[in-house]
Each structure stands twice: as structure tokens, then as C-alpha cells.
Image 1 (cartoon, helix red, strand yellow):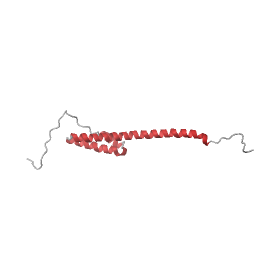
Image 2 (tube, rainbow, N blue to C red):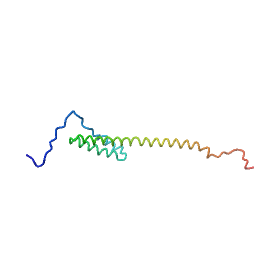
Image 3 (cartoon, rainbow, N blue to C red):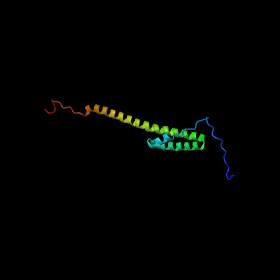
Image 4 (cartoon, one colour):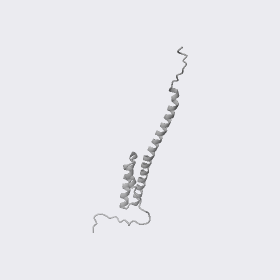
Length: 122
């Protein structure tokens, strides 16, 4: 009998009470590779891996905690990577429209009208 260290007796996980938390690993990998806004995708990947490790080891509460953090960072990375380029595109379009209107209005200011009768030459 091996008594070199105390063994922890864990009760077997109860099936059916609460489903295992999702780890959001695929979403985190996608955010890390394609939409890594301010390294949030990498942070989400770290929490997703921690959630998967805790889920495999049987610590459901810690897995749920890390899964929640991974979901939040994934959502922030996705929102930042989708919303910011759309916002930048909208700002560029409105800037171009504003500059074209400004250029059309200032054409009259910068043009010099030549007329047939010059009183100054006589």
C-alpha cells in the first residue's frame, strides 16, 4: 500500500446537473490569428486554454470562471476588429464627401473672371 503522500478523494462528477462550460478555444484561435486587436485575441487564447485545462482536471468552477473571461476577451477582440475598421471607413467616406463639397464651394473664390471691358486699361 502506497502511503507516501496523502491522496485526495474526489467525488465523481455528477452528470446531468450542469453541463461542462465551453472553453471558446476555436474562437480564441481565430481571434489570435486573424483579428488580434490590441493582443486581446492572445489573452482570450490564454484564458481558453486555462478553461480547457481546468475542465479536463475536473475543476468546473474554475473552468467556468476562465471560460467567462475567455468569452469576454473574445467578444472584445471581435468587436474591436470589426467595428474599428468600419468606423475608420465611415470617417474616410465622410471626410472625402466633406472635402469635395468644400472644393466645389471654393471654386468660385479662386477663379478669376475675365471680362471683355476693362476700365483700367483705358
